[in-house]
Amino acid sequence: MADKRVEIYVGASSLVTCLGNRPATLDAIYRAESGLQYSERYGMYVGECRVASLPGFTRFESFVLHTLRKFAGQSDLPLNSPDLQLILSTTKGNVELLAEGCQEIDKRAFLYGSAQRIAQEIGAVHAPIVISNACISGVSAFVVAQDILLSKAQKHVVIVGCDVLSEFITSGFASFRSISPQPCRPYDAERDGLTLGEACGALLLTTEPQYATRPMVRLEGGAITNDANHISGPSRTGDGLYYAISQAMQQANAVPDDVAFVNTHGTATRYNDEMESKALAWAELCSVPLNSLKGYIGHTLGASGVVETILCVEQLRRGVIAATKGYRSSDVPHKLCLSDKPQTISGECCVKSASGFGGCNAAIVLRLSDEESAKLNMPPKRECREVARYALPQSEKPFAEFIRAEFKQLGRSDMRFYKMSDLSKALYVAVERLLEQSPWEDVEPRRRAIVLANRASSLDTDAEHQRILDARLSEGASPAVFVYTLPNVAAGEMCIKHKIQGDNTFFVGDKCPAILEDYAQHLIGYDRADAVICGWCDYLGGEWNVEIEMLRCQK
Image (tube, rainbow, N blue to C red; front, side, top):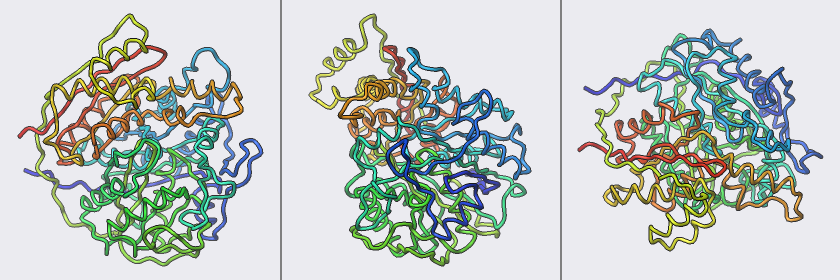
């Protein structure tokens, strides 16, 4: 028997941006007021927030705790409910601690350790789940939360997304020459780069309607894909983002006429905005009202998907979407329904999308309706089995010598290998060996997925990037190093190498989290993939631990 579809409702939410709390941010964006200001500290326009540090906690942790406490004051559901799971989405967490000149990495810089401190402070019953999937982290969290709730593993999920500004981040993006000298102008013909910001948002997803906030909004679809094109540049065709949008809409049983508006990533970088127009054209959404919020609050990295989704929910309820700040006229390949004024909308659904380094894309569909929805059925659950397993062997040799020898044994002539981070090199060899055991040429690229976890995130490369900053070299930060300060880029390298265009999610834990195996199995079980590479892939300071497996649909 197919499982009856579980309804997922949006509950209480709270946020803080450079414009203030949720009411203040909403009021400002409807007045077309930006919170972006020039910062002498960073030498660029940014969206900064005032955050009071709590005793014993970092600025990042304090930001998250302030937001969760504000959330708790608005929700009838206690944060210590045994039926509640906390998910934290972030790209860099406490990475600014690396700048303190310590010889050893501060334990608080480990993402999962920070998440544990936050969870303990709020009294969370279950171990937190941490997602670090570059700039799609926040939207990825909604897809993972949906999986948890549809599988009935929990009744409630609180998603909290946060990232804070630091020289580590601003210098890294500046090294790509992707920062605008003025506040960013998404989709405008004169756009010349993004503006960074910091923010934190928390939102409840629940299967129990008594905890829903009215007018009622439901999460009805979500998907994560990879364009398998380039680790730091979007696809030129928009196919990866299109696959995410179309899969999310298909799951939500939504057609273009149902969509009231689309809120895109809209970073104001030339290639990102062009790519998004192509993806929306493929999805037949070019005539649907669209906006980007980056001109108000900046690109807030791992927080963006959560904060912008909260603002999408409120705009959907009001029936009016905010203008795209900075937009006057566009030169993207496909004409989009953009405006420098608020737009009245009609329709039930909102599509929220995001794209990021490593070629990752994600989209969710939200539906506004207080009426009971059609009782759709989940597809019959498919069985999956492990068909191969590989563990990268340990060695007394230094990692550089060991991994070079392992690569040469593969007999490959891929010169890109030598430019990769050590984490990526370890994964490269392991995946090659795994696929020798179980080739997957019979699996269509969109039906391939890779789901990984580790403890150190990308701290090894983070430390290298920080050493470059500390040296104060005239040439500044290295983009070739900075791109690897995101753990999911290792998975992105594999997506490019092995044409993986399905899900590519990266979790961070102190040990292999249960969600990793569950999520990988559900991708196959609920017909979102036919083959999944999943497992543990960790590297720090010359020590490695890589053990991965291949799961396939049991025919």
